[in-house]
Length: 77
Image 1 (cartoon, rainbow, N blue to C red):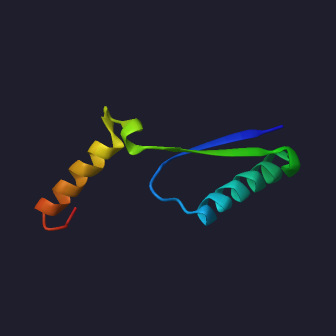
Image 2: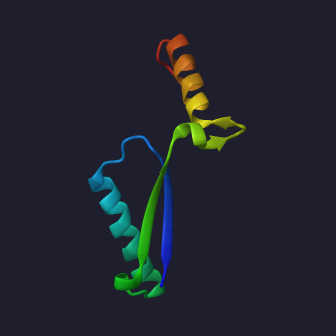
């Protein structure tokens, strides 16, 4: 009974995109591991960018800095 947990930042993934992730992850386990799709569970957790960090900073802060850098270079990041 496989359990797949997908974590993404909460930035507007559509219901259609989430359905495609669920379908694709399920199909991958069926194809690669011969798992039964009826007993394959997929959960998508959406995390606020303030609660997701990389390189010692939140994604919110990193994106804010990237936007400021792009603005100061005339949009050429």
